[in-house]
Amino acid sequence: MRRRPGLSARLKLTLSYAGFLAVAGALLLAVVWVFLLRYVPDNSQGLLGISPNRYLLVRTFAPAAALAMAFLLVFGLVGGWILAGRMLAPLTRITAAARLAGNGSLSHRIRMEGRRDEFRELADAFDTMLEELDSHVAEQRRFAANASHELRTPLAISQTLLDVARRDPTRNRDELLERLQAVNARAIDLTEALLLLSRSERGNFTRESVDLSLVAEEAAETLLPLAEQRGITLDVTGGATPTSGSAGLLLRMVTNLVQNAIVHNLPAGGTVTVRTEARGDVTVVRVENTGHPLPPELVPTLTEPFQRGTERVRTDEHAGVGLGLAIVHSIVRAHDGTLDLAPCPTGGLLATVRLPCTP
Image 1: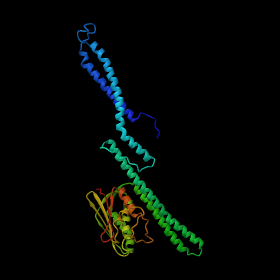
Image 2: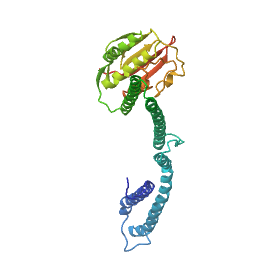
Image 3: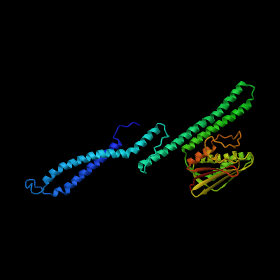
Image 4: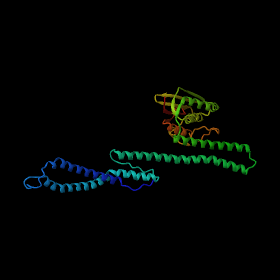
């Protein structure tokens, strides 16, 4: 945005300081005149050498007052310029850092020394903002690179299958179509997951009252055939757990947690437990599953996009796209909640979601 040039903040402070001194000096002279000189008799016609009079005092006082006023004005301008420069020095550093950030350099930090004041609080807030922006941009770049890699894989597989079919006309067309359909379905699932993740990160959804216990029952009912196919016992318990948010996003959050617990379970058998409860002003959803032991250092990375557990059991119909827990984490943050992941001592994973509870 282009603006017309104007006075700098330093010059404005200088003029304000000098003007304040000039006004203070003028008021002082006015006080002297009002409360002192007007009570001196005006004997300008005679007896000039016998006693003081208003005429002599005014003629003697006026030049000295003029010199004092001129000194105050010059002193105010010079002193104001120096003081304003010292006071605005932190603002200059903040402006330089803002220009660097505007040019794309987010690694620069102000790190202003000294005791806390308004400028240092502004600098600290600016450093915090730069750190969050730098982290967010790095995460987005990493996410974009991973997403492009994941999307490239099904497209490359489709291209390979088509090339093979072109070179071998006698190849079984039903098998080719089945494999192309599976690859295409995976690409569609990945695209929809990316769109959902973007929507939840923006947080542009309408909030409404949602009972997470009902959401958990709906998610369990949807995934019951998958659990029965794998011989997994699905247990859902808990009372009413009201919260505020998007019903669709919260359903996807619980569905992803339960599906992740089922897919990561033992190859045969096992249990998945879903519990909902309200604790004061917090609504809690716990999803726990049996399964292979998870290394503690692996757990913090599970919410990163396209990160998968090393012991994951995958099938063609539920191969996943590596965004399940990343979407859960994003939805939880958009609803002002927290997501905690912890490995179970006997194997498996315990996922705990805490959201604000609404009456």
